[in-house]
Length: 198
Image 1: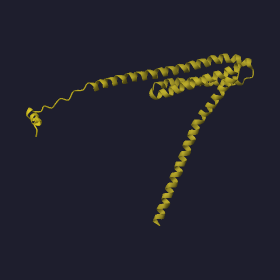
Image 2: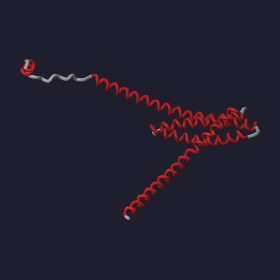
Image 3: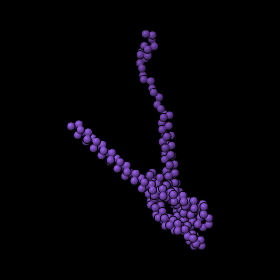
Image 4: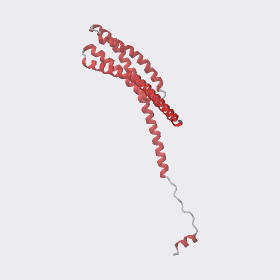
């Protein structure tokens, strides 16, 4: 009877563990999907914009090309800054500026999206000139942040390599200058005794 109670208790514990692990897996999967969905949606949208920039002619093709250029510059800058921020906390200020710049880019992107769908080409042409200037400014600012971060990371890498080289040279010099092992002073009588045949 006691064995049966123990077995039932083990089965209940095992079932509870399985249910708990399954619930945890479901929650983690939902979080991963929720995190990946916006990125996937953005990637699909980027491909669509790029395709429209290549297949459409005239001003609407230029509108799509500007959207693609602004998005590309911001994405490239974000990748560089996020990678660099892991090693250099001072890039946090640049990340904040990039976030503000992305806000302006989102407003511009909304305007450009409307221009892509506008059937009146003269209206698109008139508004595109102003939008293009803003887009080029956003691209330039995002690129400036990216280039500055890259220069900073390269400089730190070069300085670290220089210090490492100095340390390696110092160690190599220390390894080359060894003190010769001196013979232990052995009394002359002992040396003679060792030479005589036994």
